[in-house]
Image 1 (cartoon, rainbow, N blue to C red):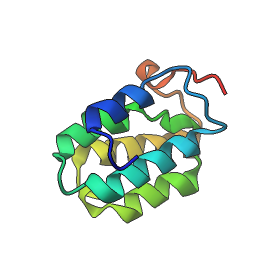
Image 2 (image 1 turned 90 degrees about the vertical axis):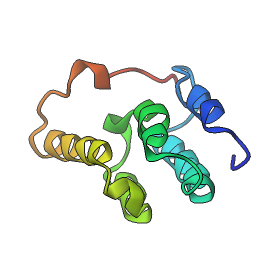
Image 3 (image 1 turned 180 degrees about the vertical axis):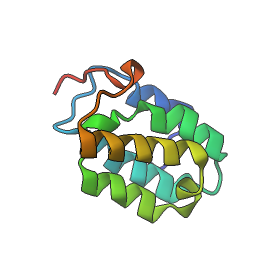
Length: 107
């Protein structure tokens, strides 16, 4: 995956019928790609084109922590902080997430 351009990765991740067993597999793919490309890609691109294509409501809490622990650049970004805080709030209170968070992937 490291050879993919960010637009290609974003296109793959945006596929609603992506054949994965869990959304954690999607995060694993993002972590693998970011580990090679994070310094060469603008963080706005990462957030807007890649991170928004992860269905965070189906990512395990441990996997979510992995991505934020591994990449300080993302941890410092206000938009990824918002994703993380929204998920913490949702998981702690089981409150309804904004409608734009929901979409389905066929597994």
